[in-house]
Image (cartoon, rainbow, N blue to C red):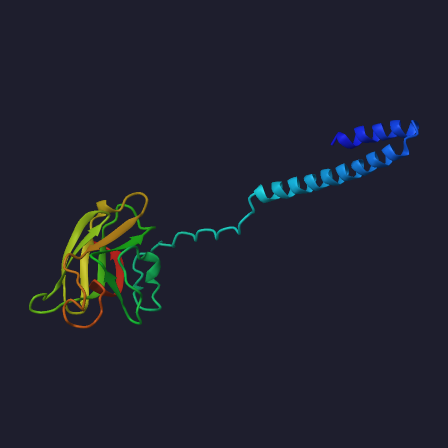
Length: 212
């Protein structure tokens, strides 16, 4: 950057001494040096820009947690219009027109907003995946907040009931229901169809009522 200044000073000195040829030579050198300096500056600017990370499109904000607030006595339907999805945790197959199957050897339902220290009753209309005589009923172990509250043998479609002790619901009002299904299997394995899903219980509706 200092070279053009020095060259201009030298050119002025030579011009005063009357050496025109020398002056012209130095003038050409000065012009070339200035052009090179500009090119170098532009290249550096481009290099700086390429090293700066470009902003990527912002990722979509994570969706809010599902609303699991439950009003005692509300019937949850597991068909295409019942809205059971917001309560369902792991272990569920896709919602069908009139029902939803569990998929795998365990399925969970999550509820909030329940009254603490209140006894309640869990009622569910179900049918089990069976294959008599080897699998006459689908055994289901029912847990509420980790406490075992029922053992169902589910075969024909009907309502199955389990009592939830008052001690199960804490001050936070949360209730996690888990169905453990040790005999869940696939219709394909039973020779009933080509369906490979590991099924256990087929849910139609469920309600939590006040207990006695």
